[in-house]
Length: 77
Image (cartoon, rainbow, N blue to C red):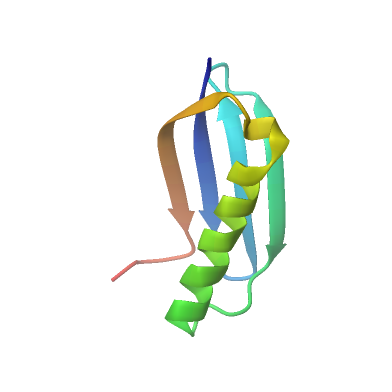
């Protein structure tokens, strides 16, 4: 089983999610425009749906997610 990590870039303009193997290679990446950072629940729901879409992709089949990294566009309260 391939060990991987999920990386999330939670930006103000774009959201990105990537699956990275233990060698640092990007196996799959998806992105979309943010629906707006000022509406917290909408933003979080969009981010969760994007991450789920990546995890549901066939590229992730048989992979073990060992870590998660999240980058944000600013402070998180």
